[in-house]
Image 1 (tube, helix red, strand yellow):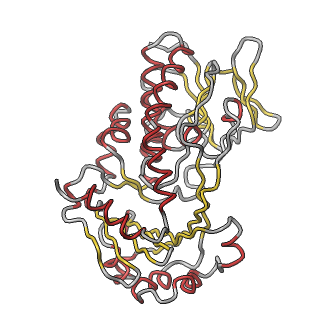
Image 2 (cartoon, rainbow, N blue to C red):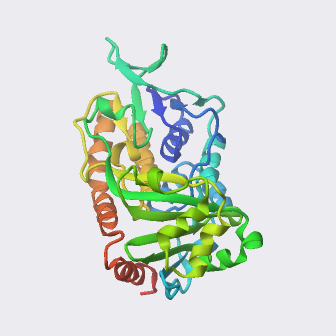
Image 3 (tube, helix red, strand yellow):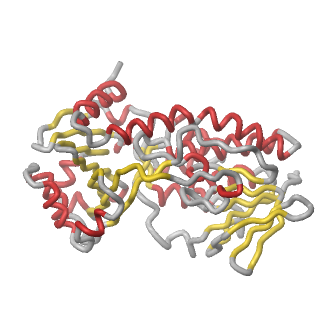
Length: 376
């Protein structure tokens, strides 16, 4: 049965694609508009863990259980914590027994794309703004081109959403944290010492108000982040971003095995400033518009809730739209519940960012690992 609503989703990340998949498999006419020219235009970022109650639940609603199991890495759920002298303070005793397997973002995006009807995803479409017509429907504008009209426009377009200003005046604020990303290819064969140091999952090394986090991705790829609390222009003025070993000067006195991570890395470094929307961010309902994922509740990465929250947004919004004939009431019900649901995660993420690189961050990280990762 064909659903009466015509829906546009702005943004082709995990949240937007999950929403498109669930709606399209139930007969809803949906288009995804993505500014990138294609799925392989750029790397989609590092590994992430999908939670049973959110990310995995959303994939179940999308009918993608089997596809998920093919890319899930239960063996890479480990956690290690070291101090800057190289002393191992914590290692997960049984990582494979947990139920939050790692998946690479690129692979997750691909299984979602493969599940969509042909032509559902429109590539190379950079939406500048949306306008409402006399019939109350919305048209999307790409320069002098336009798309629509649509009964509902869903902003799934991330931190710097073009749809959010139609609903909310808030913009993400810089947390004070800057991540310098480095990458190590084919670590098991080419850099076995780095591979053993990181282990099967995530390594955190902390001390002296600095931190390094390295995650194992698929295909023996290690993606790391050197973390600093600095002004936004610090990295460009301080770090040689074309030479990964230049990071070593910022960690003088740290254990040689830790510093060797920078020697093993590919030359180019990437700067990532960590932003967040206010905890409790919400807006007054406006018929024909809504937001999911980072566009609605951008958080710092501390807590691992971002993609999971976005995919759960998609599943819950889809459920309301499919069960409630009145599209505006369906969206309003989704929004009212979502505002409350994400509050604890947003608060925890904000607290996690605030505590990063504090004088007792090692002790706090150790306490967190013991609380959440050791058997009860």
